Amino acid sequence: MSDNAPTLTSAGPVPDEDPEFVARAEAFGGRMLQIINDGFLSILISIGHQTGLFDAMSTLPPSTSADIARAGNVNERYVREWLAALTVGKIIDYSPADHTYVLPPEHAAALTRAAGPENIAAFAQYIPLAASVESEIVECFQHGGGVPYSKFGRFQRLMAEESAAIHDAALIDVTITLVPGLPERLRQGIDAADMGCGSGHALNLLGREFPASRFIGYDFSEEGVAAGRAEAQSMGVSNTRFEVRDVTNLELSNRYDLITAFDTIHDQAHPAQVLRGISDALKDDGTFLMVDVRASSNLEENMDHPLGAGLYAISTMHCMTVSLALDGDGLGTMWGEQVATRMLREAGFTSVDIKHVDADIFNSYYIARKTA
Image 1 (spheres, rainbow, N blue to C red):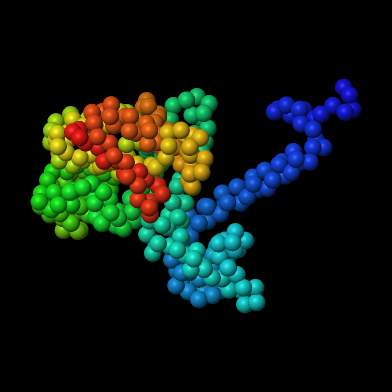
Image 2 (cartoon, rainbow, N blue to C red):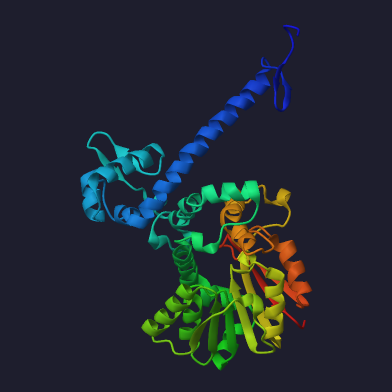
């Protein structure tokens, strides 16, 4: 071989003296290091949310690790190491002169419960949850199949927390107002159902706001249904019911004026069958309000999505795999507006409108009807 031959890599020959190649390689190496750092930081952000440390720090002046530990009622040694990581990660500010730490208010706006649905720290909890099934996902890569819902122990609680923040902030004043005339119809009294209701918070909010209407929530999770019933009792809501049911086999006809589905259709083992069942269960003049992940069905159109990589990752580690575990279609989180619209039309909806809410980068709002 000639002394001037280029270095061979798995991608083909690369001239190791090419300055442009070296610069690109160094830049990518730096990005990989940043990914590793941010991956670890995301776990500590999740811990900060779960322990309430971000909430505590948002009310404190510059404080020592001991002061912060007392305010959060947690162990100081762990707090000190946690603070060091988040300081280096440029999330918390540190004063070496007096060894105090402070959470800047502009950072608190994305890290505390007071931020409501804009609390990114709550979303960080999905990263350690996904990591908990990493070995099972590796086996799925090698042998196929999926990881069942039962393996995701905290998923129901995390979804309940996330959806509650969104619904508390927007369900009554924003979401249902997207459907022309719907608030008025709910005040007059209609029959409504929520598919994949989870812990039932959305339905209980609607039941409390619109006592003349009748609401039922369906979910295959006994834990979620029990939580919905308990919350209804604690809220004094008497017009909501909850039933353990696989919405794949609704077998209902012409029953509801309104059906809702909040971020649940893409998780179903057989989403097309679920949508057909929803269409059948809806009255001819009824409305299906489906809220689901805001994305394109075309990969190339998601390159600038602010959470594109994360949502594809969540799909791999949860949404797609739980479907495949049931011998399902594995639709995935990022099924996108084009596929969703096609599937709604195939299910019998002749009118499909898609609306977006400026404050919600996560979701698209589909208003589907069987008659124009």
